Image (cartoon, rainbow, N blue to C red):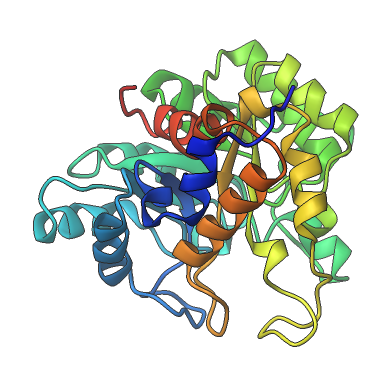
Length: 300
């Protein structure tokens, strides 16, 4: 249940300290195989100056956890993490060996294994592309290699994320993750395009012990932007998603695309929208600070 905006929250809406303590676990930055508006090191500096607690990078092609080690050397004391996505560069199936090696990399900074994204079977089918990397078989059962990666994530205490799986596949993965013992299961960008989940589906993920990710990006693409092919999400609709299960929701930006606002601007804008809509500062902090920090393995 939301509350009215207090004087303290009103101050936060207009104050520059609005980003203090934020953690963003879904940022796209260069070096990458797609144009980006920010670099990993450059954005880490900006985030540190803005008061962020931590960032985690995501590349649809390359690993980021090894570079996070180097960024930390340049920015001592700032929490920078990376992740690994099971896309085609790792093979035409979910690659268990790649997940194992990611967790052996110097620094122990891989904090998320994402299922396939741009190369996911569901994504390819929606775009009428052949092939694609599956996460379930023809009967809808989770594939053995996916289960093995779940177990790797469970044993290491890191995030297992659904990537660009379909909403139905994501629910199937959530059930299997519960069975396997994954503590940090994430249904990815449940407010975005072909991955949008219904309120009931979101509640099912939460009931299974999972977290749901709301992304800022849909509020910034659309007609007149660098990504005009997608419909813009209004702040009101974003807020409605946040109301479904705020205790198990976290907000990330999914930003860094060339020609769009920076992730800092995206995060600042949605925080203001939530506070103006009546969320308490404590509720917002749960979604932008507490939950993402916990998922990355940071102490409260």
